[in-house]
Length: 296
Image (cartoon, rainbow, N blue to C red):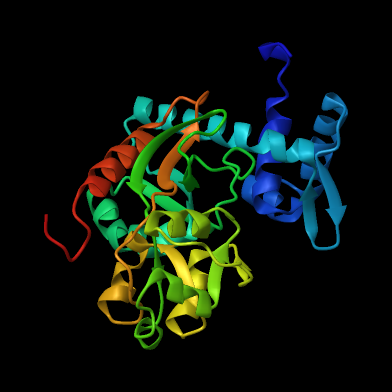
């Protein structure tokens, strides 16, 4: 579609309706009637030849086409707003949306966010957590911190922290764990990554017992159950230093196995905004410092 033919009014109305989840609320924001909003969206759908919303009793439900269109418009309108503010000399508050795997958010990031917000008052940082399943564009995010190999198709990435794994358990259970083989008598809590326990036992020079313990999609859930004496969890130690320091968890063996790492990711085909560059620089510097409460 050529630029002169872009349906700008319809796109602006669609963006507001998507964000508000309602034609009525979009109409209030845009200071027009609800009928005008509905009409503009209908014209846009007719122009594009697709359905953008399914009208449901609970509000608007975006279709796949609507979900694909929204993040492009959101970033485009944000970029226009930033440019206009620079031209007119207005102080601009830039919104930065970051998706973060929950374990990293709770175990590392949250304690350090006050420093970032103090040093970057012009950035409105908005955090949403997930269990490591995140789609940056589809969810309207700018960047995401995720756990994995450090290589994802279509994404640039920076390694923030290596995350070696070690068994952690309640202090009462640790008293009975004298050798790696003694773990075979306990419930071994597992993540959905099936190779982690076998790799740890190989590193420890022991045979891995049959793995029949429950499988979790959250390290935090495993840590909670382990601290209550419900089993032994193989966890990224760096994320649970506070629980170890306060005695809720114990690391009975010094053996650790390298697994994945925590990485900052962003779309390779999207130019970074000033807020993205500032957050990336701060995060890389903060992750290079000693853990809170420790010395170099």
